[in-house]
Image 1 (cartoon, rainbow, N blue to C red):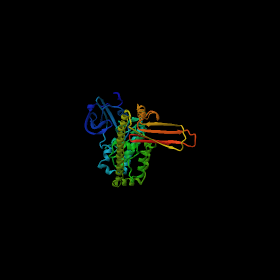
Image 2 (cartoon, rainbow, N blue to C red; image 1 turned 180 degrees about the vertical axis):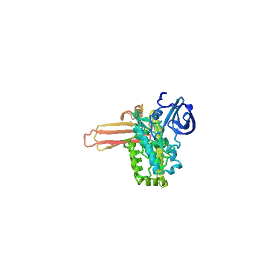
Image 3 (cartoon, one colour; image 1 turned 60 degrees about the vertical axis):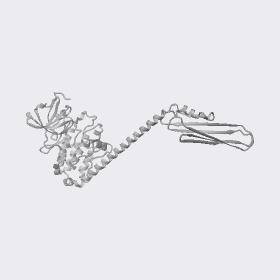
Image 4 (cartoon, rainbow, N blue to C red; image 1 turned 90 degrees about the vertical axis):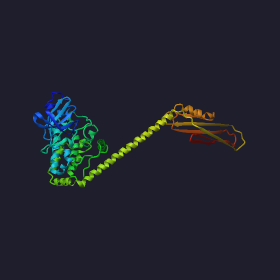
Length: 438
């Protein structure tokens, strides 16, 4: 907060007579009021506290920047007092019947006003300032038709700027501001492109979409406002340049002023621009079609997000069941069937040896304590027929059993005899069998 020795006029709260609310600014409400001791109509923004806005405004003086008169520093009555623009905001003008009279000269003059005010902030002011909340609501119209930039509640001195918090209004905000990334003065260039689009189309940016929806579309999908196909090429190119995703590619306001100057000397542009402005019914559908597409895109995203949430919920339930089962000792119902077939090719006696091995491997998503003992108990009934090897920590979701039975015979003549052993084990709904003979 500023100290009481701030270098600007301190106005007594009792010296202000308040009238109607004129709207909301950054972090406060704006009222039309009368500065009694000066017999002057003023705009007063009431605040919870005074931070940088009064300090910034006290250093600025330009035809296209709102004039600062002073501040009220009497707790809890903190106020910013500025000149009053009787014709209201540019936003209100654009979205009223008055805007139907706009023509090329009108738009060029106002586009130059805003660009000159922003160039002053960035390059000519005693301390360079980034506005960060440039939009049609923060541009007001004086009685003599001059545009002035106001509301510096979100502004910062350029020399103090490295990282920006999320401020502003999403349809006018540059991608890097939405993401709270480090910014340069060209974040205001992006916003200027939106204001220019408003003057040309007399439409509300991203009408019908919520702020966070706009933020997602601009940042993640690189969507921009629709420029109608019949828009004069020079205006369309300027807006495209202002909306570059990479901030370094956007023009400075010095370049924008140069472009506007060249456009004002184009003899063909007035007819093209006036034709565009007066035939809104022919191209407005292009903007509406884009808005419908973006709304569908956002709805599809919401539907997919809901699907993913439901899927994640089902997976968590499934994982919980597996976890509960993993702490229950496993005793499988076992069924065994052994059969032996003998064949003789000679009466010659020979000594025989038999060996049988069983390897059980089980895998799962989590270890099951005591599984080895359970399987050993399960197989105990086979006596010494099997040499059982349980591989690794026994896990729950899958099981593999490899069994081999061999019969070897020692022959002293050309006559041999052999045995074929068949075995089948049943574990619940699973069956494994192994046949071998030699």
